[in-house]
Amino acid sequence: MTNITEIRRTLKQREETGYWYGIEEDTAQATPDFTRIGDMAMHQELPIQKKMKRCLLLDSGEVNYYTGAIDGTKKEDGTTAADLSGVDGQWQTEVPAHYYKEEHEGTIVRYKFSELPVPGFTYIQKHYVSAGEAAIHRPTGKLACVVNNSADYRGGDNNSSYDGQSNTLLGRPVTDISLTDSRSAAQLRGTGWITEIPTISKAWRRLLFCEYATRNIQQPFNPNLDANGCKQGGLGPGVTTASSSEWSNFNGYRPFVPIGVTASLGNATGVASYVATDFGGAGVNRTFEVPSYRGIENPFGHIWKWWDGYNLYNDGSNFTIYERDSISGLADATSTGYTEVGTLPLSNGYATEMNPGLLLPSLANASSTTKWCDSYYAGSTGWRVPLVGGTASAGASAGLVYVYTFHGASRTYTTIGSRLCFFGA
Image 1 (cartoon, one colour):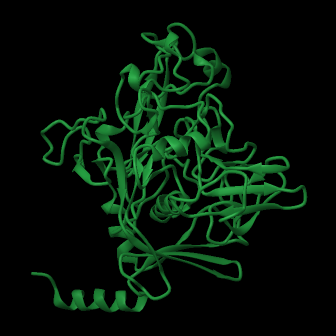
Image 2: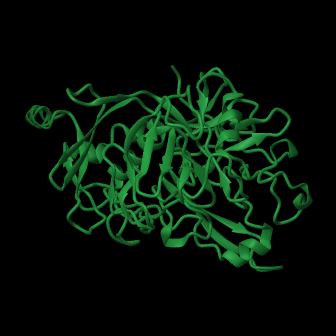
């Protein structure tokens, strides 16, 4: 029988902490680690994070079915095969509705989360993030997230000359696609479909930072809990350890990791090994550790991903951030309809501090093991947009908030792709 005294003690503690849990940083300190704050039992339970789960989402925004929590190649019953090819819907990870608050007090920044409508917290509605990097359905031009090796979903720049070879683009994510075209391709799927807009791009990353209480997400993956029953370590290096010259020789910096490598992990956070045949030359294979955070495969690394909803303008003296957190009214190279929310550094470095409410740096003079641990590259004068995460050869520079602002929204390259998301009305 449950001890009534313990129940009362737990309820009293949660009343005192306001039914929230979170993390805080001291911007005056170099450590990348956060301090866990709020309800400590919630840090063990992770009530919001544990509701993240993979599913097949119809174009209407309705969940067709959830996939297996233990083995995502199956349906929820654990025995019936799930069809991730696109027939049953788009492969997505559901991020549950929750409440969020960010506080700044001197050098202290607090990030708080709750399942309940705590006063002063902002509501984050339920939404969906592609479980893998985005593909494209070539016959219709619709952005997709599927596990499909047919020519209809050939990835990269659609180069068919690699078909049947170890450097094939079949089953790989689409690249060589601009932000403008990624947005349009997502919207072709119907109302609510979009690339990562601000609410989406920030929500799951903040949940990850809260869960692991560190910004150094490239720490080795450790499935064991710490002495306090909380998560420790990180997600490992991810797909960031490729030799640039080997990758260039292999397929000209096109994507090489298939979508769905981590499907068998289900909703769990973990790492799956992928062997890239002939990556180092004929007969020379390379193994890459592909991470998944609660159903979101390759949360950083492998290829760059576009962030939509941000227009960045560098006039030579200020690098201003304009934000539009909406699925409609998004446009390129303009501040019209956007809100000025901060400034970016004018020179390169590692992210030191973030603009309030954003995951875009206001200062960049840290290192790969201090502060936010991820690189920042400043674009030249003019309109720019953010690419995030880093590529397969980025090494220690890569991470959840590795931001690259060199390009405008029309830029294409073999290393640039995106995610497909759904954000309903």
